[in-house]
Length: 113
Length: 112
Image 1 (cartoon, each protein chain N blue to C red):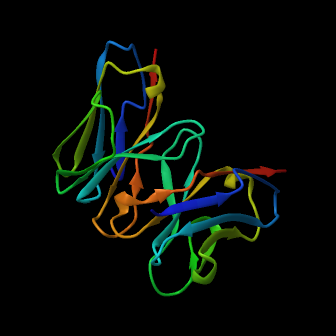
Image 2: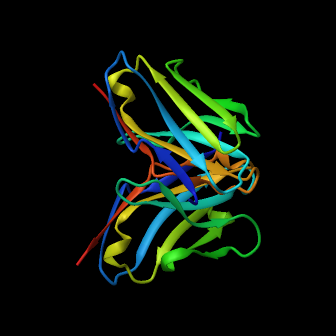
């Protein structure tokens, strides 16, 4: 069975610092990979996705992620954190149909002034 | 309106009540989903409808009853719920096989 592991349920960074949120997946074939963001009292919003092609994927709000097949990883980064980036972030993997996406447990990002 | 709309945003109900959650998508998608998000638990997929047919039911108790009358609307009928059913219920839609989910803002359910 496919699984998604997000290392660190809470990550705290200072404003302007690098953001790194880790995600590893277990799958016998390269899956579709996604990062979603959830702000308080809202639904999830897609940040970026990897399907095929270029392994470095750019998303909204300055985020990007790199698919590394050899490491089965899809870590999310942003060079400089903003206060508005404080939210919960979910990594997800899907082999085919989106509804069968497996989600990680989520990482809460706190940004300190 | 655009996107995925859920109503009501907040719902408080007793264990003997019957209520329904509604979801509407304006994206032209052909698949819709119900997810449950509880505190300190991973997102749980409850039901999947593809082309208005239920294609997945992940061992959800029968006190939750989904209905998908057309490709734009999805309901979750609730009856005789338990306090542990209190959670954020998220509706999502997608175009089949694109891999990308579009979520509504959720319905926060509290069962007393």
